[in-house]
Length: 292
Length: 292
Image 1 (cartoon, helix red, strand yellow):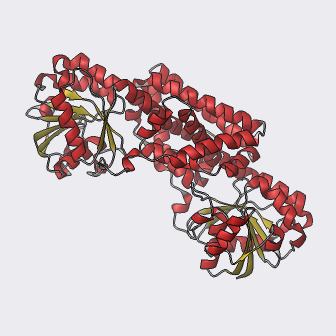
Image 2 (cartoon, chains in turn yellow, blue; image 1 turned 120 degrees about the vertical axis):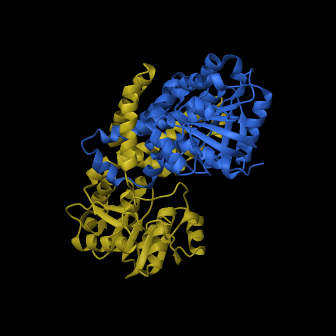
Image 3 (cartoon, helix red, strand yellow; image 1 turned 90 degrees about the vertical axis):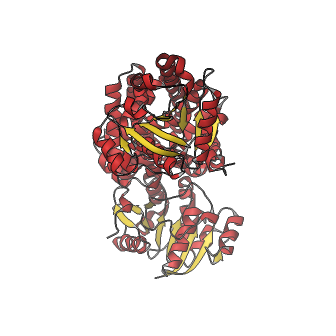
């Protein structure tokens, strides 16, 4: 049980964490700060937070657990804003989709207190942003990846694992580097492709007509294209090497299939489609396995 | 009310049509044929068809409505198999995802009876194939595109419109060429991308690990990658010019975004992501509008 959650960033991810923590009876009081005062006010009106803090530093004041839920490029500035009130007793976590840049920022800014920071990436989200979409069930049944470094304090890592487990999450650990390589492939690249495909269609003279005809396959394929621009700008730039490497592999595979289509090589094309179809048909989202 | 549906291809699309037509009380008897006798037998056991026909021709014998629900490359051979029993009174439709190739096959084979054929593309589907997934609700609330040619008989076009409307579909008309251009962009390209992306990931040494970490965004983005290999092989080769043109536009857009990522041009990247996000957030699937 925590006395006070200091929530920095009261949007979808942060707001949902606060609601989940409250519902689980794990926190007495949530003090929240958002860059936009209207967001902070809205979060209080909705009962997502109990107290509005006028600064990130004041949200941390008195907190024994702190969650950073800001676009990843804002992580370093946020650490700077709060570092004077960070103690070895404070558990600090984030929810960023990239981990190397976040860990680097923590090392640079938190210095001797870097052990209080447990980098976290919950594998969940919605294609709509903002505190009005905050949902206490957002994390339930999902995976959370923790990427501790050698200086992370074991006690904090343990508490972080307990908190996410109490919210119904399946908690995994890996290095920041392995995390960023994996999510470039299965998350950052799909987002980049979805954004590019939508823009490619709407740039055409008949793009609007085409979009009006699209059906349920298109709907699901492009759902992630509605994601938050600032959040995804930061992720793509923070993880650019891995993302560009994955995009290159993807384009090479795409171009190999294009050649088969152009030459009418139906057998080879059917083989490749068959491989993809079988892989996808047997794939199961890890989080849908019963939580142990 | 029809006396007899001759169903050629008792898979997901054909089986669902038979079930929907029966439930709506629009047909007295369904005679079905599939290339695989075990499929035809299964369809009869499930009540999807009433009588198993030993050939496509015998499925058409006595039918006043015929549905071709076969991979598009099998259309011409199917027309050849049935043409001797086609009369001006028979309404023939298909459910293929490409229309120019199907219309060309109808002209070549049906000749003076081509007016009986009303090319149809229902914008629906599932990522699982086979009669065991046939569903009388598959077409309800979805769009159906009819692509008549100048020789299509008005009476048949009218009856086709009535049949699909009676199944709860929103019926549109366009030329085969416009249809194929639009669906290259909003359906065939997304499928090609999804197949290529899955194969690109699973070709990597750590591909299996990466896939095991993927979350709900990946799940929805790649749902269509589990689609039927033969069906999609045919669609991609049948519509290759339009598909490859769309793939080129997509790759150009993707590469422009890659340059912004590589150079760390966050403002330009955010603008492009913002355009895509706004377009997608405002997009609504036509079929989700109340049916008039």
